[in-house]
Length: 573
Image (tube, rainbow, N blue to C red; front, side, top):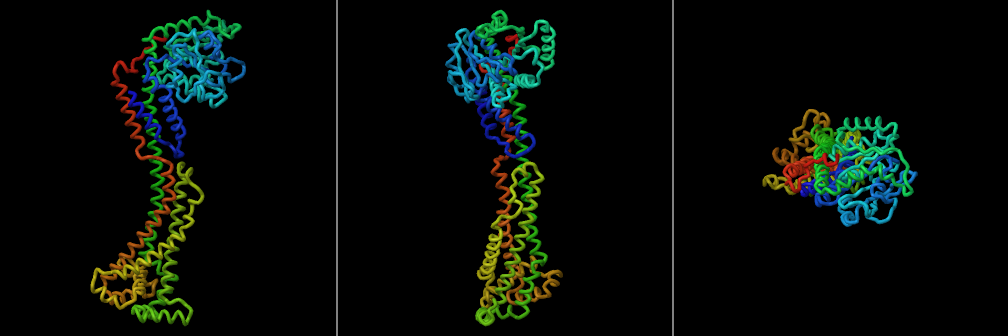
């Protein structure tokens, strides 16, 4: 059982709910509460079933909890006053023989032990009361409806660490909503409960008691013992008259004296707490699955946007649209003036390019064409990346978890995209020239190309990539390029052969799309790293359910000596 609880604690503690989803806050609070209960009560209690029975005294503001505790131990151990809230830090009272167990800090390990009263909620004042028998301890908790948030949270934490909850209310406030919410929680956890109805006017005793009993029965708490204390005045020490508290003190004395009765109460509460973990774990598992599904959905929306961007680039390479504008003008100049034929002869072409550039001050046509190709591709990449960023931003904005992760700069491409796009195109152009230069699969191709300029051939291959996949111009391409694409094709086919040109164009296109994929992946990563940084693991719900099943099996098959499954409500009646 203990090993199963330790494993469950680890799984709960390492499962996060970081995405902004409906109910995520509730899941985080539930997970924190379960870890706290495991640390504060279940694990230390399972380690020491023979430890003293802890009675947590809780109730509404001004119900008289501290006065009752003082009266039960016959000493002023907990502060009493008219200012609210009075009890700020909890006070634990036990017999001298049991002080060592509570001082060592296994139970409620998050609270620092102190011997002096204080107002810090992270401390636990320990008081030894000689009048209190061994085997029994009272913990005076802050008000469950305190105006101070930390007090309310601490009260709930302490109640979850109780072997038995002594709920104190008054004739004026017994029907308040807050106490009944906690009573329902205690009932669901299987915590042993006893009640004290305080400050009851004698004339209204029967009516109020009967009504409270009806409410208890309606909430499944009809078996819980109920002690009624009439209105009275305290003595000089601030204690209730002994004759009024005698039934309650006697009941606790019998419980303290009977080790089997105490063990039965402890097993009842332990079994109830462990049993209540099962539906709580399922609730956390469902929430964890929702987190994982949301993270996946956000990533899929980004992937879809950037897949569409990649498809847009690929389609632009297929349909000839990149052959328009400046590229078309430079290509027509390059082919129509005969520069293609002249520059295909390496030595003559290089000499002529230098002479033309020196005499006119203008770049050679091949350099202008290469610049136009670069500009056209960079523009295409910037436009498609911008569209993908806008689509991803809009998709996340429509999702509650995505909207919380967005920042304004995600609506546009990365600031350095233009530089990366330019570098990509230049790298690709160099790669095409290297491809032409190193093409060695066909010896005849090598022999024929040796006499021609690599640059001119490379430019023609780049244009081929812009034209069509198989380097066969479509009607749209012929119309757009005025027949110059066909001319280039025929020239190159005549020089290298049809299959060689098809191979070059296909490889160059694949290289370009590979580089585009890398660029778009970098852009998509600006989104994907945010979901990754959120810390949503894959399959968290399955891990929680598996830990829950292991715990349930351990609880079901626990041996009788370590079995918290036996219940004993009759002990506290």
